[in-house]
Image 1 (tube, chains in turn green, blue):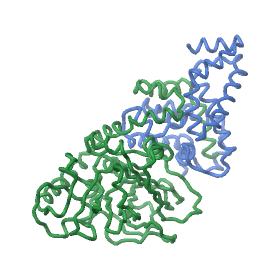
Image 2 (spheres, one colour; image 1 turned 120 degrees about the vertical axis):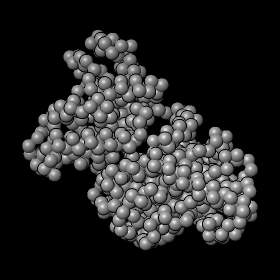
Image 3 (tube, helix red, strand yellow; image 1 turned 180 degrees about the vertical axis):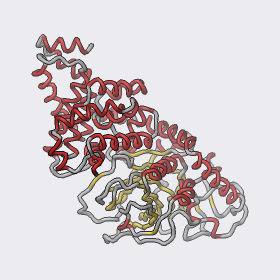
Image 4 (cartoon, one colour; image 1 turned 90 degrees about the vertical axis):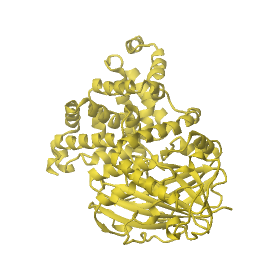
Length: 363
Length: 184
């Protein structure tokens, strides 16, 4: 008997139970009944766009309340951010004055420190990530690479460097040691930050299995302002994306939505299907390379590694992504037990609730 | 129109039965088929097959739970077509994910196949589902009968995806034991 036979056998479930499940589903959310019983077509897909972002925002807010320890980590991040706030020179950062919520910016890495305290293991290269033991590994993926080699392993646990903490903003500041200001190669170059919405494919069941014929670890990316392509992401088309609005104001979110520009990034990895992943940092270096740090979580359900394509996207206001010429990804892998994997999944959800700002060099 | 009225139209051999069925349950069945096949044209084809089957089966059959009756036919038709079209595994639908999840519920294939027929497995699953709590049962059915994505289940029940995943994992583990997977 194979799993398809088992799936077919599910049809033998008592029809009464089947209808009870359906009724429970619609009773729990009666306003969605019309969606359930109505076929989807292209016009309907467009009409749902407006509901995607606010809905995700509310859900993200609930998740903050759930993760007590995550909230504590966020507090630490805020305190640190406040410290940086009062130690920064005016020349170090330039922020758009039109963004009132820019008083506090915390990257999605705010939830990382507890993870490292609770995760133990050895450092492995990207090809060894299928072990079921708790593992931390870090690798780097660069766009345009023609090699199929695994990402370079790092002996430094991901997320423990100063680069974990994305910048905070300031309207006034004092001088600070250069190493504390920014992790960009040109720390003394004035930088600006723009808010971005993150859109990540849902790891629960929307990743695309591939045949492995293409080069691995080779990220592809494109930048577009095409409304239909952006709609494709926002509406959760294949692969289904989850859009995180963070703590940005409705005005900011609406501003991005009204004139969006998107960079869509995808890459392949042979692994046991990372169940979730989150963007921890996004920054553009002086040469136009977008450096993204991404944490990938799994509790290793699959025993046989297979190739998967992962997708992520950043959405910003039109023009904010123009300086990006290349993409470089730093991947940190966390393979845990199921229990910690679930906690990491909540970390991923938490990361969607955090703000992600893209540090840019001014044109 | 109530289900009983629609079924009466079938018994009267009134072709409005098909129209009413499509109007009331076409969306439900097609969304299930779409999750399996990931293709609207194939889904439409399956739905037409289901309507034909319903027309041929009613009478003499008189389904008590009409929606479940139709969905069962629809998912069987879609799974058959899926197998036909996907000799080579491909992604993009919920089917591969569901199959992967269920793989862990299986015992050693040969052992089970020798001892348990598919019909017996169906009956076992039918009984197994009744052992689950109401919440776990509903989540299990929505996932593996209606092929609903985890994310959508979580949203509809206003719970986190992690909770849905945990529930499904426990149900699968229980199903594995129920089917004799403790030999694994």
